[in-house]
Image 1 (cartoon, one colour):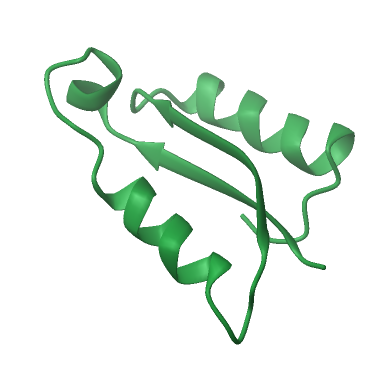
Image 2: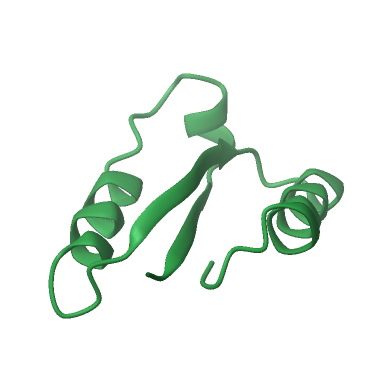
Length: 68
């Protein structure tokens, strides 16, 4: 089975000033056939290069996610 990480990048969302609707929609799409993947990680982060890089490295190197 394919493991997926969904990373939403939104400064307003990360600050709680905006609802993340895209992450939920993407989760619906990737868990439905034909992909039928498992969402193993999902995170909302501000538009900060270091934070984004840290999450992506963790997901790739430690969690071994197949699709981000």
